[in-house]
Every structure is written in structure tokens, then in C-alpha cells.
Image (cartoon, rainbow, N blue to C red):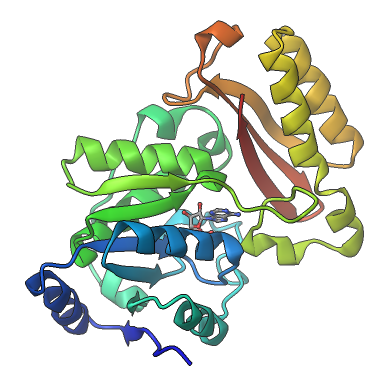
Length: 283
Ligand code: AMP
């Protein structure tokens, strides 16, 4: 069996481990996660191995990115199985800081993100989310000093926010986006899919199917407004409550009028019972 990753919980142990990599002239890739790992996370790990000599995975369920009404306390946690999966993937180091280490008594700083973080998509429904993400990711970058950091396109607005933040703050980390890993029927893998009832799971692939069909129609120059309103209705007809279903500029996430304003990305968030799903696709 592969040797397990070194697991560290303290700043001192992390500094020592990262320092050893650095002293040996090795490059480091970081994969930030909230645990409850699935094949999507592991795809990031595999890509990280291709980019860097050492792969560090952080596991931290970040309270700062959950609103009081959201699922912070019930968010799935599976540390032992996560470590087993990371052992198989030959991860070098797992950084699992306790909450008090990241947010000690008196913690008073947060990063104020605009641009893609204020695109009126996820931020409309989760106003504190990207500030929380940017702050914790900046801290993880400072702690782990990676050359590369890998994020999933699954959380597309997050990927663009972190990319912007790293560039704006001169963080010297190359942020790399990885395509979404899906179930055979198209549903994007997500730690929150465990919340879906069997009936909800059966209709959940509607989201990706509608994204695909809508992207094909827009690429064939059908008017964006018509395609998007018909897509919205199709998602609703499957039983979802739609938060947004929009075509945006793929880099800035600004609103677009026609396919010529592209490159375009379609983004959706919709609720099925108690579960909120997000997904997106390139046009
Ligand atoms: P999370 O643990 O949900 O915060 O996700 C950690 C990282 O894994 C983020 O960069 C996500 O975008 C990425 N991720 C989550 N689901 C998938 C997926 N289905 N395919 C690819 N990456 C994913």
C-alpha cells in the first residue's frame, strides 16, 4: 500500500514540511478543499501531480463562507475516508488546521472582492460567500506558499474570483482551473449530492442537460434571451426552483447580449427540495 500523506495540524509542523520541500528545490501545488472528497477533488489532485513535485491538500470547512442559514454544522465530514483516498492518490501533505488556528480570537481582517465576485450570480444569494472564500484562500496561500493552486470549474465564479484575487494581490501563485467531473448521467459531482432523495437524484441531471442544449443553441446563433428563458422554464418544469440561469462573459462574468460578446459561459443555480445545486458550461 502507498505510504500515507503527512498530516499536519499546526503552523510549526506545516512550516517544517513545506520548508523541507522548498529546501530540496521542489515545486508545490495546493488543492484547497472542504473535505468529503469525491472523484472531482481527486481529479484536481491528479492534475496537481502533473504540475508540481509535491502535492498539498488542505481540508478545512470554512465557517466564514457559510451564512447562518446554511449547512455549516451539517456539511458532510469524512476525515478518515478522505485520508484513505489521498493515500491512494499519493498526496504528500494534508493541511487540516483547526478553526482556532485560522480564525483566532481577535481575527479582524477580510478581503473585499469585486469584479467577478460581484457579478450578481452566487453573490446575489450568498452575499458573504466570496469574501469568506478569498480570505481563507489568501491565508492558505500564505501558509502553504504554493507555486500552483488548483480549483474546479464546477465553482466557476469562485475560480474567477480566486484567479483575480491572486493576480491583484501579487500572490505569485498560478491558479489553474480543472474541468468539472460528472456522473455518467451528467450530474456534476458535489459533496452536497448526498442530500438528494432518490426522486430528486433522478431529476438532477436536467440541470446539465439543459446547459448543454442551451449552449448548443446559442452557439448556433439562436437569440440568447429566448434560449435562456426556455431553459429556465425547462429546469423549473423538472421540479427545481431556479436562482439564476444566465449567459455571461466567460472571463469577466459581465452580462452579454449576443454570442459575439463572447467567449460565453452559461451558469445556473437551482434548488431541488433542500439541496442547492450549481453548474456551468462553456458555449
Ligand atoms: P469543495 O470541497 O466543495 O470546496 O471543493 C474543493 C475544490 O474541488 C474546489 O476547487 C471545487 O471547485 C472542486 N470541485 C468540486 N466539485 C468538483 C467537480 N465535480 N469536478 C471538479 N472539481 C470539483
